[in-house]
Length: 250
Length: 250
DNA sequence: CATGGTGTTTGATCTGCATCAAGGCGCGGG
DNA sequence: CCCGCGCCTTGATGCAGATCAAACACCATG
View (cartoon, rainbow over the protein chains, first blue to last red):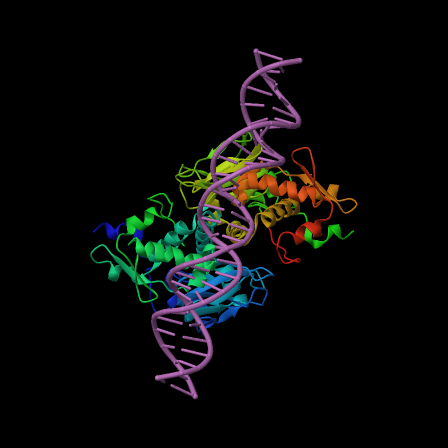
């Protein structure tokens, strides 16, 4: 099937003993460096809905998502919220050289993060140029994703936004490969309607309505609340408004 | 006056013989490194409206804006456009490690850029860790700006968007200091209504209407088409919907 | 089996911004 | 001086998505 085309490559590969090796900071580290990182590393778990840090709070670590989904959001004084980052396994959070978090970091699902104490991490970074390079690459990728997201927020219709989000998650979902039989994609949509609406700059009612519309038209099939099946990925892709061959990332 | 509060710090300081020293890549370079950079450096000028590179085209340089304003935009197949980057003097364009530009780069005003051939620039970067560090800092700043921008696009009203844009430009305009007498700010708004609409995810008619509204209410005064005076910055800031003390950057 | 809570769907109505359309202002060129 | 062009303003109208409101599905708990 054309389903396993470059359009839906798995996003992260390397998994060894260190969970954050996926694509993150220490993927290329060895020996001494790796030991140093191991020593400042610790794990933290959160339940779905829990807040990891509040905007403005002190954040004395950097981290990588091991399992689950974390979100970054901003809140206006009157409560309007916009998600500005969606972190899937292997993604990185935290800003070297800054004391406090600029965003609310929240566990969208149950979440495990691999954390590094910030100060020592920064020291290691200074002695180990390739960690900085890796971080630069990752930050540039994130910037590209943010800009793709800006196009979505500024110019797409509600329907296009929903289709885009589903495609973005589908592309990143590592379990795809297993399920990509007979040209259909089956995967988990691990966000509530509310989280989706915060991602997309819509209300949750609009999200729900547009999901129903796509379902009625057969572009997606839902199994239970969170399982999604895409019978024909290319067909859904046409609803995103994107160039048919565009290869963007989250 | 409270006008010269931290809210409106000038954005870039260091100006020496090399124009891109402002805040850009070679600010900390000396001796040999600087010589190496000088050798791969050249200037390019563009007239307002000219395109620097088209999305998808080969981009074999990285660059820093010397004077004028450049924009990055994305275009959908049907012509909808969203600006995703606004580059003022001292800002950096170009992505080490990528062959082609992901965005249209356009001169919004007459523009001078200081360019470095990409391949040799990357080589210098590898031998000179602090250039990479500088680039990482700058990229992180840009990511923050992009996220602030996402909040604007996703959740702000047309009126708030306009007020925000004016405040953003005002904060970054280096000529502020000179004009900040008697508590009023006078500066140039160097974007057409169309460019503003592309920045904000609005139509140009809406931009025009909201500008008129702010003018009628006395929150801004216009002198000619492009000169803007803000009688009371804090008053305008209240219209942005942002936290009153938020210190974000473009 | 009722109970309450959380997340979702669907309907009715309202509204902010887009769209379509016309005219105004300033400026450079014939 | 008039004309045309680029840019901006303003008006009339329409519609996508927000808002308000109700009810449903699912599940855990007493």
